[in-house]
Image 1 (cartoon, rainbow, N blue to C red):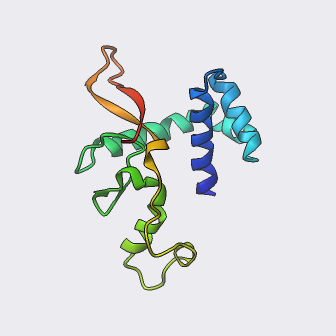
Image 2 (tube, one colour; image 1 turned 90 degrees about the vertical axis):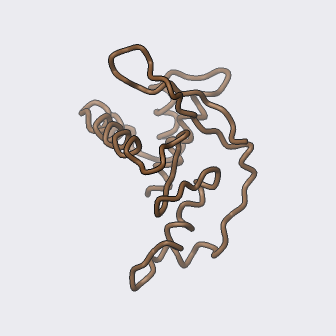
Image 3 (tube, rainbow, N blue to C red; image 1 turned 120 degrees about the vertical axis):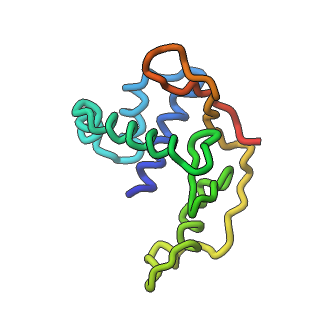
Length: 146
């Protein structure tokens, strides 16, 4: 299910970056339909404030990483940032797993990292400056990974 959620986020970002981009609400509605996710559940999460609470919780965790993040998504396994290979996070989690029995998903993943052309992947770089408003939100700039 998490893969569907990641795909939903990627879809919304892609919709938003398109030249004839949709509004935010239309983007998530289009993507929920494409991925067969419940638009009603997504709207409920948004309207209830639960989604915002999760975003703020993730922001707090990200801001307190041992190695500060440079962009999002910034995926870290065992205090090591995955950089441009973040889509292979399952591989890294499986390699770092120290439990007795390996989770099922690990047996279906290759033992080597998937080398992808990261020049086509986009990230959002965090500006070192904070915006002038009182929210303290980071300014973000979208650009492809080098």
